[in-house]
Image 1 (cartoon, rainbow, N blue to C red):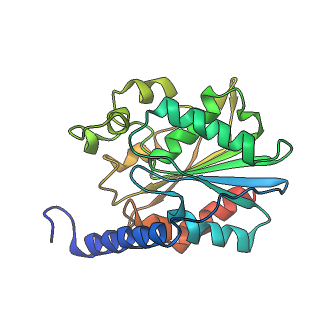
Image 2: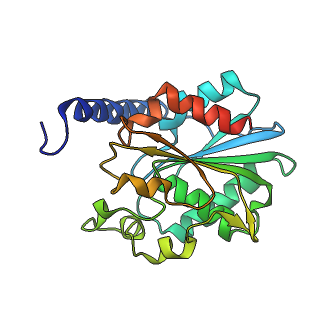
Length: 228
């Protein structure tokens, strides 16, 4: 057992990481999607992951709602600015301009969603945001991790300070649900995932950073937030 991390949680997080790896490997060569419906939810993965980690959650959303879904992939070496620009192009190219848009981001993916909403002129159609274990106030766990994306996640980074504590678009608040994993060892302190103004903050004190991607209670939260 790793020091400071209960064995049960360590095993659950390890299982979640293995499941993510299996989903990524299984769907490595799938073709890009182009949803055509009036409501599209775009899912954005976290650091060092890929779009397929959201597949179980997306299947649940498809089964229980009328939202079509799309995932967005990015690599670990580009800057936040480059990734945000590519994200904006992806939405412009793959999502009908008439569609209502929701964004769902895990970890760093939630910050990318916020950057798109707050800094991109093309984000007018976004009507709601759901973030899962996203370090809105940064995370201390990356203080000694190299790389431009890890640096951007530090509590005092320019990227964190630029976004501030509100999710707004032209002064207008965007409905936002923020899920906090109470046993998170990647977002430290875990409360950073709820450190954003005017959000509906939901805590799952027994969940870790990665296992919340596969928890049915979190699926319920995502579905309820989309259907509001």
